[in-house]
Figure 1 (cartoon, rainbow, N blue to C red):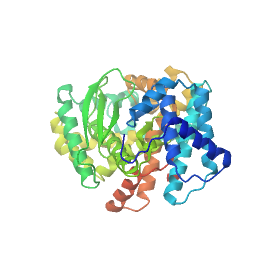
Figure 2 (cartoon, helix red, strand yellow):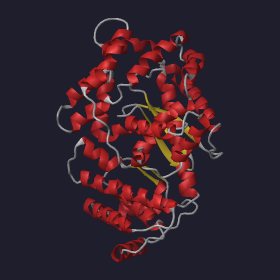
Figure 3 (spheres, one colour):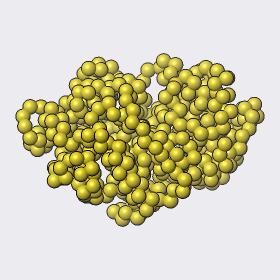
Figure 4 (cartoon, rainbow, N blue to C red):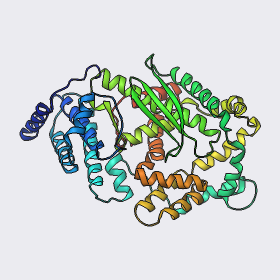
Length: 430
């Protein structure tokens, strides 16, 4: 149990919530709804093993969720009732209003996920809006072809752009025996740069594990008490750019820092118990993934990343540092193709193409290797429209942070505000 978290019995909690709904009265204690959300999230997690990404609240609540055996219709109805009650509520402060809005959208997304598990089918955009409070823009082939044409002129050799890019990248694979030292060095530097800007708990920490046979390339498993376990999937070759990508994204100032600050400032300091659970399929997704991706730019602004990798990581990986600039020239163009993954997922989920065609689209327009494209299709099978959170989330966070201007101090203050507040994706829109 975390400091400031107040526990009511389930009977008392439900009675209070019912009274609020029936009378339409103002809610002066949103803790009741924070507690209810945690219970419902844990209950939904009994039907969806991927739903609860992390939980570090009272263990009795986890046992209650297992023992009570609520069915999906009960969970959905309870979440919908909470949305109705919160929509009628008035709050006494701007902070309370922000919390109410956050809880309302979380309950709505939970209800939506329950309907999906009941068998309701939704399009890619409906999933995006219902779960993540955001919808990615659509892009046709012409949008990606312009970048592919640039790469066609830049990449050496002949044949398809995808094949030539894959051949080009073979010179930038980190040898398995060097992987651990390269990653740990990158993590240390990302942590150092982040700590210069953000105050983190003295005892925060995380460990790195190497795994195989996963649908993702890396994952942060937040344990609570400012601790994380980061797993790196070594099924496929890992290129030099992934060291900083994963160190920042999964660690500093990415997922580990985001989870740590939410835990410290909202759960521990304010007692907002809803932040003891992190639902994967929820509006927190675009903020979590978007800030983790944009965190790379925050930690290494301008040309600092290329300089650090050239001077430090390339040598550790046994690579030629004189090739760093050319490598990142190519990768900067490839990054402009990130929304191609959304289009593959959109067409696949909407039934316009099958799995093989989705993989072929990813090879042709996202320039993934056939193996990585197959892995991404497995990811879409498992996580659906979650793919929008990486690119759309990053773009939303970038625009919101950079709206303060080019000053790095101001941007870090804005970034810290995002990492420690209950923002929703729709609230980042201009």
